[in-house]
Amino acid sequence: MSYAPEDTIVDRAVEIRRDLHMHPELGYEEHRTHDLIVAELRRLGIEHRSGLAGGTGVLAWLPGRDTESAIALRADIDALPIEEETDVAWRSTHPGRMHACGHDGHTAILLGTAANLAARADTLERSVLLVFQPAEEGLAGGKRMVEDGVLDGSVAPMPAARIYGLHGWPGVPEHVVGSRIGPLLAASDRFEIDVVGTGCHAAFPHHGADPVAAAAAITTALSTIVARNCDPLDAAVVSTTIIQAGTGYNVIPNTARIGGTARSLVPEVRDLLERRIEEVAAGVATAHGCRATTRYERGYPVTVNHEEPTSRFREIAIETLGESLVQDVERPFMGGEDFAYYGQRIPACFYILGQQSPDGPEMPPLHAATYDFNDRTIPTGITLMSRLSQEG
Image 1 (cartoon, rainbow, N blue to C red):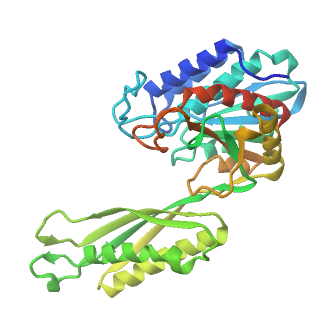
Image 2 (tube, rainbow, N blue to C red):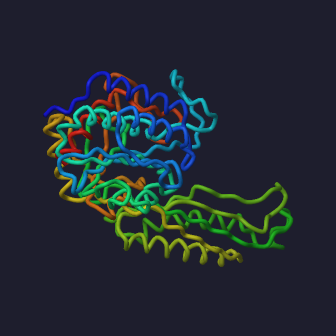
Image 3 (tube, one colour):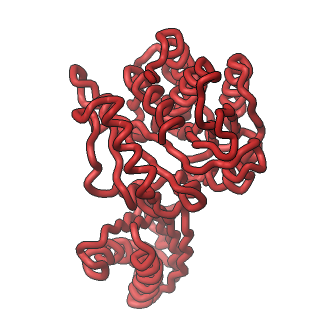
């Protein structure tokens, strides 16, 4: 069976994508986006439950001949607190907010998939769950969707047997898809370090204990953890991204604050990073006559792709798109993804969808103020998601 969508479905998906791009909403605030999704599902006659995960998540379902279980498809719906710098006609109308990670494209593809499957409702072999998830950008909306029962059959009439999700990827040619078995994206943690010294006049630094100098030394020392404490074959990242201190040019302050992120792919390295960040901060602060208190917050777990659905994804992608448009992702990415929470419950496969146009300039990276999802890849996403829902 061909799962290529009709032109009217693609046109509607593009229209939705651009509408969402014009009206971006942050995590757990996606009320207009939620209402648009619900209105589209009603138009298509698809059963659904709204108001999940704190109010803005939606789960929809299409029964097939097999009503014992379903294949789930997921899209994230939130935007980022970034001032858009594109000049497209559909640029954000909300200052300080934009869809800089392509979630508008992911949502449009899943709604297009819903329309494509609804048009074939009488021929569906497998039941399908459509998961529209809020708050992926650091607020763990996926975890709340799972806790609300979107996978276990307590919301929809059937549980999910496995789940697929996609992410637009600007560094890969358009229409090319890819994935890998095992870790695809890293565990994503954050840390804050408060450095306490003794403030004094900046002209007489020997009268105090300088937390700014200590914070600078801690920042430098943290960068050695991966190089000197981790096995070179184990991927890890420790990045200091925030340093805050002082209010006057002639005053050494009492305190300084450091913040950053740590990324890892295996539990042992995650444990090591947490331990060493605290040890390094405390030791360096003491050497400067100060003291440091570290708070380490574990965020998203590693996004792990299971063997069976990921192998099936590759087979179906090659059959659907051709071998030239399917690539094996050789190494994991160090970004984080809360799709990981679904994979902790059921077999899962997360894959990338290339965005780079062959005849255009180099596409900006994810989270850039000039990023815009490539609408030409929407039919590819709809076609592949539709087929995965039945044969994955």
